[in-house]
Image (cartoon, rainbow, N blue to C red; front, side, top):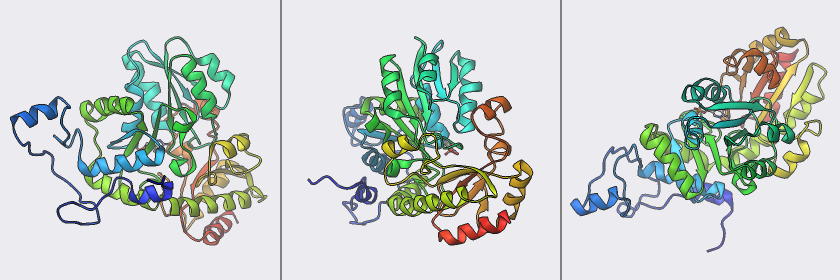
Length: 391
Ligand code: PLP
């Protein structure tokens, strides 16, 4: 069969009319358990020798359909869904380390993942060195013989730093470590980290994959063997499966991923240029701008644009930034990102507040930094909201 374009896969992968009812829309299977044909069938399924769902904490038809859809978009052998993005992060780290092991991780990344690495894993004897993963020499020097995972977020939350996945995969594999990538900001629309050598790519599916702000979930993709390990660790044993209802909402969101991302990232590029040219703005971080330190890499590594996320600082520092934040009317003051509606966050006082201040500043998350998640509204309306608030 002809190789399908990812936009087509986003609609069709993991979906087929129900054989019995012929319903086109996938059913939401809420059942927690599934009937066995016989004692032999039950035993064969438990041995993994027969196909079938046993118990929804392990696998579920509605969740499986989303896993197949995401695997197709990532170009992966398999994918596994989780109750949240953080459950995907935890499973993707914990599956590859034991007591005494070491992780090298991006210094600029989602603060809850930092907390997991900084506070939870050390309780089990696993340590992490945080480095600027855009600096390959810094990554090389941070790797030790005990390093089992190189954990990278690109583009990074909230600074939009872009790390070189092919180079990092080379460094990780040379040292016998896995490259795990949080690709939430890019989505499979803009980047496919597995093609650059990553072992696992994960997403907070709560964000652009869902796109409508009404479900929490996570997903990780990679080889069949690694995904099966993650399923054992994070879903079956840790007990964090995605709910079938969330899977249905997220799968519905993924069908329009290409439409939404094309529009939102186009608007983000337009808004980033306007903000960068505005004297009321101190600095704009957006990989699509020629002034972004990794612009050339982003052009090579990302496709179809540079994403829907912008970070910027208002001239006048934190007090001015807070006034702008408070005066926005259309753009919602809220955490999260990747929604059809535009959202603005002040990371230093909210999402990144749990980071120690020196680590936060070293990661480029300054007191005045604002993060804008561009939605699919008319871009002129978004600009007038920003322009009026900046005045
Ligand atoms: N990774 C990134 C880049 C995120 O922004 C987030 C949440 O904001 C997460 C992971 C965690 O995802 P969730 O909130 O679905 O647990």
